[in-house]
Amino acid sequence: MPRSPLTLAALATAAVPGLDVRSARPAPDPGDYDAAVVTDGEGARWTVRAPRSLQAGAALEAETELLASLQHYVASGVLSFAVPRISGSAPLPEGGRAVVHPAVEGAPLDVEGLRPGPGLAADLGRVIASVHELPRRVVDDAGLPTYDAETYRERRMAELDEAAATGRVPAALLRRWEAALEDVSLWRFQPVVVHGDLGPDQVLVSRGRVTTVTGWADARVADPADDLAWLLVSAPPEAVDSVMEAYQLRRTELTDQHLTDRALLIGELAVARWLLHGVRHGLDDVVADALDMLAELEDATREADD
Image (tube, rainbow, N blue to C red):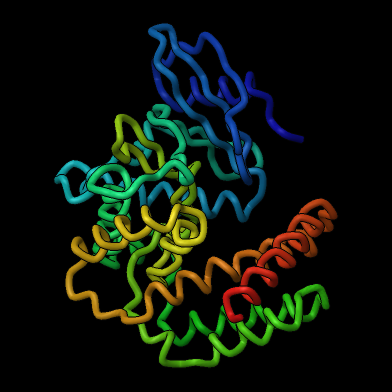
């Protein structure tokens, strides 16, 4: 049974000595966690999260370890944005723990509102590049996964095979994706630290700058295109140019000739992954949404090919 905001508030007071909670409300988009935002006696807001499963608990432990390592790079200026700073934790009766951190500041990124130039779009490119420049040991030390390029390509192929087995993916898209995944030259990249789940809700902005990046549970060493795909398929094309120019200037020794091609491909494959999510969990509304997206993508790629 999900924990109520009041239960989570009690865990927060146990996790942070002296925390005087005055109110609590559900946190938006909690994912695999019970989450609440609590307000203390001085008006400061805190976020408390408790995992709903053993798998979520393991992910939370790894994320907590990673966040502790990232604080060094925030403090030294290597990262120009903040990440959640864990202030305390409280054990859960079934095992694992709830964690508490000060609520992060900023508004979710308005991707469609991005404009070209040296402002937010360029800052976003630099932010993503700075993550990709982090040493791989921050992921290794947190016990998060590391992949080489060939293994990662094989994972993508396995996902496509599973999507094809549903019989729901248009044949033209399957042929297009299979050809790209079989082109080994496209997948010659240097694995780097990636956030792994970037999106508007994880990138918080204020006054035209990225202020905070949240949601690090899926961080890994993998394909840098993973962190760029969502932007390339959803941001205005003129803003994408500014993002990529700033990204490339911030990266050192970037020789990946097919980075943009893979990012666009991964953006398309995300629709197949959405379909699989709906099929695996029996979510008819998700399946229907994915099928609509696949039909739109098939039409768009046909027009582009023509």
